[in-house]
Length: 544
Image (cartoon, rainbow, N blue to C red; front, side, top):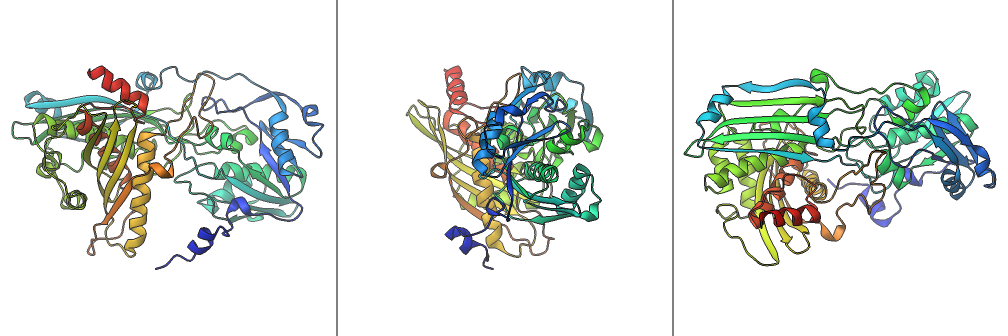
């Protein structure tokens, strides 16, 4: 079925949230330190010098609790006022010097996700064992257009226009921030830039509402790029220890995965600053964000499997939130490289090795579909290495996000001199049960493959002891249009199965396939992503 929104979007006439205007409105900007600090610290102003913006016509300061913003009649005046306002911020506890060492050392809440057989005994008897540690970064939602909202709060109630993904939850939070009964708050949805998870759309909405309530006029709040990247709710970092073993015939006999990650916030930054609420997070047992059992070896028939999730408390790290296919890129990056490593030890083609060990017909279906689309030619990985400046590799992997089945094949080029990796083609296969509109699912696969490529090759939130330092498109690069891979999308139709998710389930497989393609091209493993030129050159130099 054709999408009715496409003509206006293609012609540039579609009205996104960022384009909405109402009569007599003011423009607002949030005022915060550049880059968030350790979660739980907040942003407490010790002093605010309102006279520092006295020369900007009509600009005024809005403060409620620890929340600070500025409003003005003209947008550029609001921008200038946010930059010029002199605020002394309370110093905050430092962020960790070494993120991954800190995550491993901190007291965690541990949950056994899967445990059957006797992994310890099976490892002792295995013919080959692959074991390593993988490090995976914080990543930002990084919408192309920073979040925006418009609020009109008066004595009789509030109307808030935003790009929320949950208008009822948004209304509840706005009522708390404004101190109004829920039935006095109306939330109106306007489409914004693709956000792929829980970015700052609620934060912008609450900020606009607080400012509008303070000044008694409609206020439009547009986040800047540094607001968006610096105060995002990031996809959490992950540390993984993975070990797997095979017998002499190449059959998996043991699998073990230990994962460290924290959960994510419940409250928005504005909510916490306005109401001075303590940090709220998921930290205990099943309420934490556990390792995904489906992405950590479940696709393979293995008699001895143990998966343990180590929940790290979020306070003291960075604020987290769901990012498309939450943590599944990290799970697949670690798990599927371990599976590939075993195939290499056994001198078996990576596709054939997976076929020999697959544990479910639907996993086999997407695996075969991706391989067929790519016209996979059997060979042992890294068996055709070259000394050329630019080398090529191909990798395959499985992955998902809880309910559907994903597989991918990736073709890449590696410039050994510059360290740059280019993904030239990704073949993604998805089994989401009965698919009603295959064209839309194909579009989802294409988007997933491109976004996963960006995240595994480019994206990483950086920070020092004081706070986040990746505040623009230079310090937080994303894949450019000219760099994205060609994508072949395959929908594995299952008319006899219920419809399941189709928006996240090829992400992890794409990340794993690119990582395995790098080994095929170079004979070297990269166990940390993003696979930046600096890390590539260091890994290649260490081998030589």
